Image 1 (cartoon, helix red, strand yellow):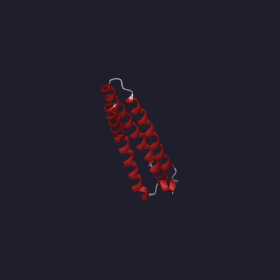
Image 2 (cartoon, one colour):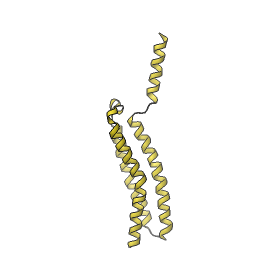
Image 3 (cartoon, one colour):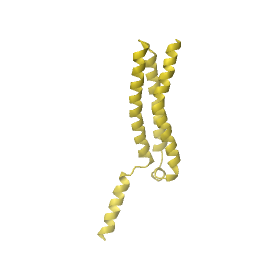
Image 4 (tube, helix red, strand yellow):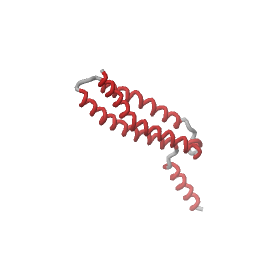
Length: 125
């Protein structure tokens, strides 16, 4: 009799540490924000060095922050609104992968795209 209870307790503990879609999305958002911040600093600092005192790179920084935070909040809200049952529903795997892909494209691409736009604006001004 002690064995089934022990197995049951271990299975319950294992389920507690297995992340559902909500937890996995939160992890992706946290890591994407770290990558995004690093890229933002690297790319924008390179633009700041090359622009010779222009205020445009600072506007790029503001725009980058203003765009990524609402996007991450939207992802977080969508996935945190799931019930426990939905959060473990494997039929949502495709939707999860699509959102994660879009998040990473945004986190990696946005600093480069906006910095390029602001650099082009600085040249034309």
